[in-house]
Image 1 (cartoon, helix red, strand yellow):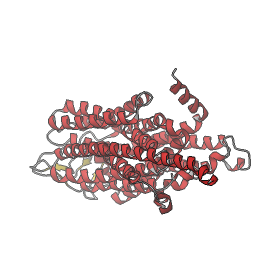
Image 2: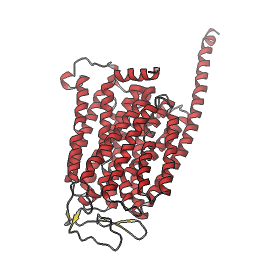
Image 3: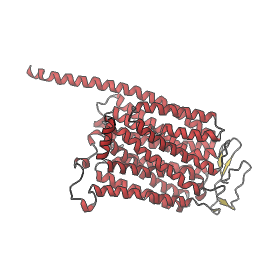
Image 4: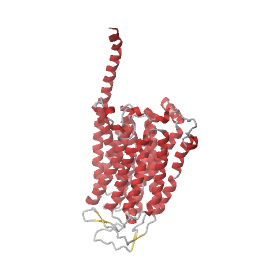
Length: 490
């Protein structure tokens, strides 16, 4: 075992219960983020809405995920407030899963997912902040593991949903007819140019769907997570019955998550006095890092949300059950990829991992465009894309925080930008698929992946300039310290 491995293992043993708790809440996050993709057509049927209308449900979830990410830092000041927030947020996710089958109108479904999105955003910010604080320069490995649990939850979600998805049509006696190609689900049709147009279902149409059972099963699967958070609160003597007992951890650990470093909610990061005398590269690194994760998380969100719809559309016209496996394969690849990146992050720097990942994403998207008529390659490309893109978020957070020496608002800014990317990209891609056809889905993702790589090259150049500035600044500070005794003697 190398010296690095020994240090990481020692750190983990010291903080294992907190670490496992943060990993488990990210399982809830993954469970909640992945269910919409394969169930979108069944939910459209349940709410008597068109594909274009159901796209706004994605927007609702991602908008409030952004709100939750921005406000999540409000709960980071003490361990008690952080764990209370995580406990209620994971409980909310189970509650939302339980009530989704009761949402027979798209507005009610949007409100339920807005509530879930807010809980997910709070989880996202708090878990990332806490792990970065616990492990700092060694956080890359633990962040990779943290995001592995997103993939694990996101893998479970489609697998649970798959047996309950509608085989063909989820309608009975709904007189929905058109002159173009039928896609099995009668409320989703295809025009002559390949674009999707939508037929809304009347409120009197009888809907038969078994997907409700999937949501109730997911609610039960998620219930152990708030119990795990509660057990950590019990272990740390944070429950009311132990409120006056001595803490097991260092008391300083509860007071703050290093408030002097500026980590917290997005609004606290905009504190003008803290931003004075910062070099331009400080702001460029935040902005470019945020833009990169805006792009990559946007690709993940839109691919997971619409690869099923893309597969059942022309020219592929895959069977609904067969297409339903794509989402599971994508999240399985992300889960496996994050396991691989845990090992790789012990041997390679985040910058090298990011170059490998982003180049891989570009190549896969180009090949998916070329072989757009191949069912087999869609499965292969989906798998490779998940493997390549899986390590981008944790590597980017660790890389940016390391460059800024944990003195900026990198984690909060990056988490917020990633949430914003998921929200806007899903909305944009959904509207483009609806108007221009399914081929535009892969085209959009390819263009975004090229833009993302260009942004990363700019990020690396800014990182070089920032390190150069830091070196010059330290030399000047040391020179002043050396000269100060001489000036006092004079």
